[in-house]
Amino acid sequence: MKDNVYKVNDELIFRETEFGWVAVGRLQENKNNNNLSCYLLKDDNSVEDTLKLFFELESLGIKDDPYYHEDDQAMNIFKETIQFNNERYVVELPFRKNWKELSDNFSVAKQRFQNLWRRLQRDKILHSQYLETIQDYLNQGIIEKVKNTEANIYYKPVYYLPHQAIKREGRVTTSTRIVFDAASHQTNELSLNDCLWPGPNLNPNLLDVLKNFRLNRIAISSDIRQAFLKICLADKHKDAVRFLWTETIKRSYIEMSHTIIIIKQVHET
Image (tube, rainbow, N blue to C red; front, top):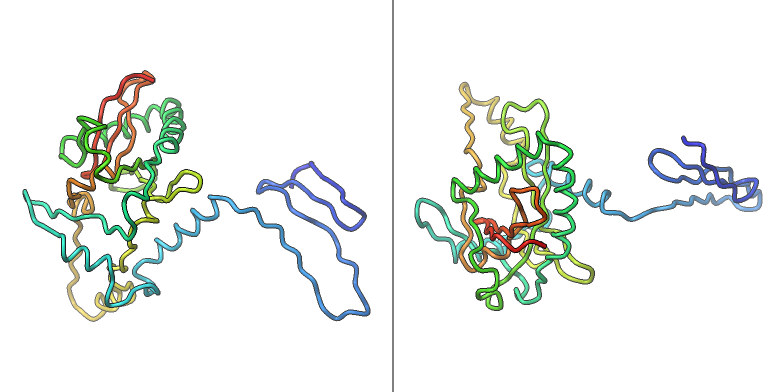
């Protein structure tokens, strides 16, 4: 509880807490009415939506996907368009809307990147880890620079992904991971996620995995390094996953897209 208090009347006050303002007080008992009343103040914000999404993602493999059915559009598109080229699988984004309905989201991504850049300037260790990750992506061919941002942009989807760093303390593996936000959008515009079929949950059920460990004498566990980054996007969809980056302290920025990515050095702004 904090000290700031706003008194409405003798029965109701608002008090500031570490989590925001809350309503506090008593409801007078109505002897002529056996019904009880309950009032709730709710403030919609992106933090609540983000936490909800986080726990939904954490439950993958634990509960069944309620939206899955046999004739899944995302899986149909995947099966019809997947290719194997240069030692990597190449897939297309499963668009469920016409890609022309997708706005580029550049202004939102730029504002988010400016906020991220200020954070990186304050945290030199995080900045070094971020830069190392980006350089590693470049070296592996996971991302590439955009050579011409205006070339054929009217004939393919273009979208800029905001991104941020997620730090995992105490992990044996990489402590910093870059996460892209495909749910970001401008006001009254669609996000990239809005335009794509979600697809089924293909993770194995966690209970089945645990039972198999108990039923067999020997268990073998393995992992594929950067597994999701081994899958390439088709050329026509690479520009739908661009993001911004810069390697210098100057006010210049770089446009990137995922190969999963494309980078382009742009004039100073």
